[in-house]
Amino acid sequence: MNLDLDTCYDALKARDTRFDGRFFVAVRTTNIYCRPVCPARTPLKANVDFFTHAAGAERAGFRPCLRCRPELSPGLAPMDAPDRVAHLAAQRIDAGALDDGDAETLAASLHLSSRQLRRVVESSFGVTPVELAQTRRLLLAKQLLSDTQLPMAIVAQAAGFGSVRRFNHLFSTRYGMAPSRLRQRGGDEVLGETFQLKLAYRAPLAWAHLLRFLAGRGAVGVEAGEGGRYLRTVAVGAHQGWLAAEPVQEAAMMWVTLSASLLPVLPQVLARLRRTLDLDANAVVIDAHLGADARLAPLVRATPGLRVPGAFDGFELALRAILGQQVTVKAATTLFGRFARRFGIEISTPHASLTHLAPRAEVIAQASQQQLIELGLTARRAETISRMAQAVASGAIVLEPGPDPEAVMAAMQALPGIGPWTAHYIAMRALRHPDAWPDGDLGLLHALGLKSHRELRAAAEPWRPWRSYAALHLWNAATQGG
Image (cartoon, rainbow, N blue to C red):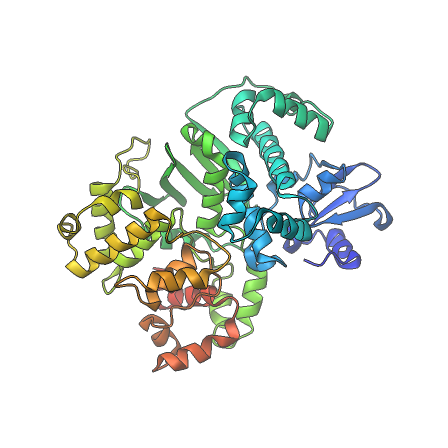
């Protein structure tokens, strides 16, 4: 966002939650930076500076506030960022791209040179990619120290530091305190079977609808909704486990419980979960835009904060989308469950509803078409799944948010059996494309009382760049959230 001094200061005085995570305020008299919703006394306008990212404030020598805890601020959705590529780079850095890789690899994944990557990141955030990564590690470590009793060595590793010594030095140098100071509340350090963290979002959040959508379309044994919680099994690289997420009462926070086996890949897990639950969406902005249209206004009023369910794994979502072609949701879910049992890995969890990891592209790419047909598929559908699995396994198609969703959709449609509807549905959920529009969908036609796809496309034009959210509102109204 444009850091206009008057606008930012007005938002700070009002503690406007719409701006939480969109900028940070640094107070020169205390040398501390805060979220705009900080409950502390509002500083004088002459004593503050504003930054688009926490890393910018830390580069300028400010320390994070211990009251409002900047590490808990919600993230930015791609459409909130002035430079979408810079924002995508920041998202991947948050997910640990520079912990196990380097800037050249990250730049190449965004179709940039390392010099271009540095330039776009510095232009948007005022810091280098390496500084973004360092701030992310420090803030994640601060959150783990504040919210858990994990041993210090485990905290350092989970946050992405190569050694406890390096972690202690950077934390003390940057924040002016030893990491152990955040453990003064007492309690022994312990590594149990699970741990809990909070994830922030911008209210409102239509949680019941989001949970129903995800749980109703996941594979039996892989995803579930129980007691208002979202449950799923998790595999990132060689690390396996499970997680559970549920909203915190009367706070724009999610409580997330994770198995300790996921600590080595914690940044990746949290980034994927944020995408799955669409936690970075600015619901107020989206609802205001869509609610200005007379056709959508009643739907937005009925379900404020409706999110576009994402995907924990892009291929998992693509498999579910292909299995759902021309069959009911229930039938597709049954087929998906067969795939999980046949090609997924059995896993032990404390939840009876979580028994298998979702099948990976590499495994299905090696399966014969006859093996796929035996699960209840037609020969043509089996070929489509096999070709998609091979494309994802080889890297020819990358099903995660990237700089050019249109190019990925075109590549998908070059595969046999992938039409515009499937490509846009996958883009909506796996690529996090906010303006995908599956206009071949009969449900959308019926919801609007239209007769042709041309009429449907024309009707949706005013809803750009949030047509994915418009589609969810129409689907939700047609099925009453089912």
